[in-house]
Every structure is written in C-alpha cells, then in structure tokens.
Picture 1 (cartoon, helix red, strand yellow):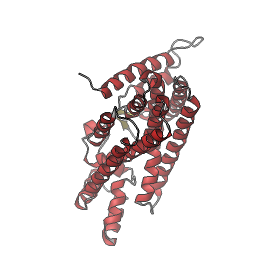
Picture 2 (cartoon, one colour):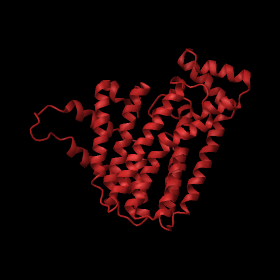
Picture 3 (tube, one colour):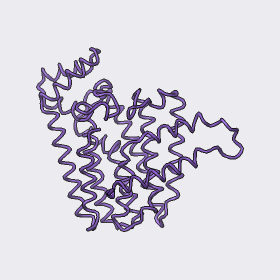
Picture 4 (cartoon, one colour):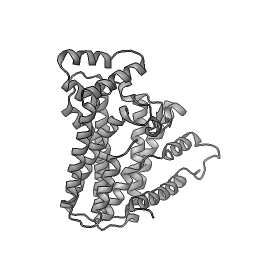
Amino acid sequence: MKNRLEIYRDLFERELKAYLDHETSLKDGVTPGSMHSLFDPVKYIMSNGGKRIRPMLLLLSCEAFGGKTEDAVNAAIAVEILHNFTLVHDDIMDNASTRRGRDTIHKKWDVNTAILVGDELIGLSYRSLLKSNTARLAAVIKTFTDGVIEVCEGQALDKEFEAGSDVNINDYFIMIRKKTAELLKTSATIGAIIGGADENGIEAIKSYAENIGLAFQIQDDLLDVIGNESKFGKKIGGDILERKKTYLYLKAVEVLNNNEREKFRKLFNSDEDAESRINNIIKIYSDNCTVESAKTEIRNFTDKANKAISRMGINENVNLFSEFSSMLLNRKY
C-alpha cells in the first residue's frame, strides 16, 4: 500500500505530465516540425526524474493546514519547474556535463539552447502558479517571486566564493540559505498559504523548511565525496574539481593547522591529476573528521526542523513531516 508521500508524488507526476504535454504542443499557426529546438529540451529536462521534494513538501504543507492537494498542485508544478530552471542555468555556469546521470542541456544541445530553455521554464512556472486555486494568490505570487530572487542571489554568492580566498563557514551558511534552503522554504510557505495557515503556522513551516534545506545542502556536499556515483547521478568529487567552497572544504580550512592548511589549499587549487587530487582531498576530509562534522550538522539541522513541527499548530500529518525529514537525511543520492 502506498504511503501518503508516494500518493503526493504520483498525483504530481500525472499533473506535471499533463501540463507539459499541453504547453509543449504545437500552437495554432505554428508550422509542424518547428519549436522542437525548444520543446524537446524542455521535455528532456523535466522528464529527468529527480526526487520531487519541493512539490511534495508543498502538497504536504497545504494538506497539513486543512487545504486540498488539488488546489495546490499547480503551485507544486511551478516550484518544480522553477527548480529545473535553476539547474539548467547552474549547469551552464558550472560547465557541468551530466545531471542525474544524463547529459546536461548545454552538453546535449548547446549553450544558447540551454539559456532559452531556462527562460521558457521560468515563464512556464509562473503560468502554472497563476492557476492556483486560492483567495490569497497575491501572497502566493509574492512568496514565489521572493524565492526566485533569493535563489539567484545564492547562486551569485556561490560563484563569488569559488574565486574568494577568505570565505568562512558563516558565509557558507548565508549562501546555502539563499541557494538551497530558500526554495524549500518557498515551497512549504506557498503550500501553507493555500492550505489556510495562520501567521504562526506559516512562521513554523518556514523554520521547518529552512532547517531541512540547510541539512539537505550539507548532505549534498557530503554525497559528493561519499555517495554512490551511479545513484548520485554525477561524478564523485565534482565539487572538488570545480573548486567549490563546500562545508567540507571550509571545515577542513578551519580545523587544519597553519602548515597543513597551506598544503591543503595548494592541493585543492592544483592542476594535479583529477582522480589523484580527489582521492587525496577526500582522505584529508576523512582524517580530520570533516566528514563526521558534516554528518553532525545534518543531524542538528534536521532536529531543529523536526522541533518546528510541534509549533505548527497541527496534530495530523506530524508523522509525515518526520518521514519527509528522514527521507532527506537518509538519502544516498
């Protein structure tokens, strides 16, 4: 028997397919055979699976506060399309060749196509959002728009950090709050608004989602060095090769002594053989307990998220939020 989260996902997948089928069909007056340069890559990225955690959280939040999932499903589609928009453009900036085990859009087609696909996706996300069945549509649109801006700012910080030499753990948390946690918070808040939550409920769900988002990003950093490559969908050590200032990197800089820190930074920024560099840096992470530190932070933020559940003013679905947290905490990819 399917659990509630699986039911949310099945509902979402059906509605997403129907929406995209409609939006990527040839419009009146369009010559048959045209538009495939746009529609094919749109369908390609949106059919690429993924965990669908943002739409599931939105539907869960809506129902938890007494709303109906059918009223929120268009908003759920919007946040997932928005998420994929960020991935398409992030992959261009990171020069990533694979995403979820398949070629990225700019790799399979070209950069111009990928930019246009991202633009199309942001438009499609707003078109779906506007179909949400709620008397508080203005609040939904504002929350969504604020989320778009925050995610873009987070990506800007991420790119700046790659070239920066004085980035610290606090800077990192500011960045991931914007780049990763914000979209989860946006999803949960929109669901709660559509579900009829009061201000106390909305503030509690924001706290839950933000803390889960922080745990999720640190877990993503961790999986880059200990994950199963076939399940993770991208090469292990990719963050190392891209010289990203992840939690593990910044924690290593923090705990190493001056001499060790200098050697570590030189290795991290070297042009040494890729596989050798990845293996040596992962060993440093392991030997200096930065891997264990990351695991501790994941548990701490997850505990904070779960405590926020008790402040939501709901009795039903509490176990579902805990189950959702556990799904993220124990993921392998």
